[in-house]
Length: 125
Image (cartoon, rainbow, N blue to C red; front, side):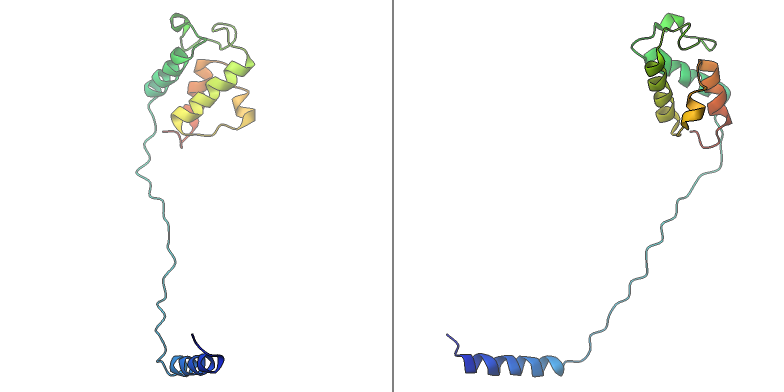
């Protein structure tokens, strides 16, 4: 075991050795710069948008696939209530990787309105 005097002298020696060490170089790291790269703007064709929207509607559990058409109104023709319509709009958002503001989502009541809205969005893909 160390005696108190032996420990004190050891600490003094260690501090003297540490004081005489040459300064260490400090590496400076440049901050990371994150950049998002986009490909050339390629808008979706209307026929592609139409088929994807119709596929969403056909895949919806409460919708009879035989009744799905571009002119189909969500509530009148397909029998969807307001909550179902919100779910359809959310599925469209997910499919095309867009966020539809609530006021615009409230205006989408048919497949053709959804197609027109998505075709106007340049960020849809």
